[in-house]
Image: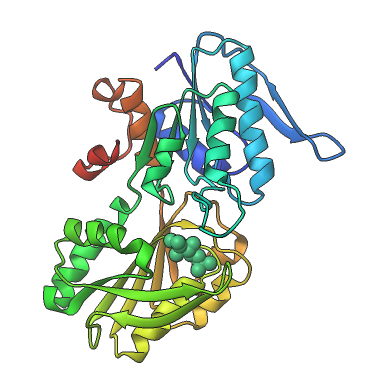
Length: 330
Ligand code: R5P
């Protein structure tokens, strides 16, 4: 373990602390602050020469600052001759624009991020639920795209037992999420699927056209990778309720939670929203009646141990590795 060093910027200090605890490692010492004009300033307070440096940072709000902190941390480690640099993005921002829409003139932000990581000297990266799996192909380095929905499997299996398999439906909130939802349904052993036919007239505005599948009297499990404005899930939950759904629980890995979404969720027909801590919570989420979370720290720690071939020789991890976590490492 002595060659491993874990550093973090300012995006997820709590999560970084938990990962360090799981690894039984102190967090590396560095300054990640700002110059008076707002420019990001990074300074290592310990040598990383010859070390395997792991940098944990989500590129959530403020995205540009968080990205720059990570890039400068990587560049600093590179210039100090770190043996390897692994970036861990619990949440990878700028990954939604992953293709050019026909007829539109637009960038592919996910590809640009890939080029920036390489230019900064990063050798591999770990993330959780990439917006689209094929984004891995943009990165000319090993990519570990972990399966964040693994945290939700056990409790949905319990729900299946409680309500009965016939009364549980796994629902995709949009056409793009069908494969993700089907995979989750297979993992929990639920044969009943439905999907919501959603359209976006413009970014961040979701409109439900119809629901395909039988949800009347059923307990619906909505599966999504992220909740941002909440439009997708709230409009979806409203449509399901109108069609006579009994309970509606949403499971999303990344709680982007922009603007007033926490308040909207409180008033929505969603019974519960379950997320993870890939993004550190805005204040209104703490103590929210309908929102619960799991910590991804053990999953990240397990993956770091496996990457550096330390896993079988350590017992420092707080939670056993589950089968599906092992499978999730691609
Ligand atoms: C869409 O492709 C994603 O999987 C999410 O459904 C979407 O980003 C959620 O955004 P919002 O909460 O703003 O509807």
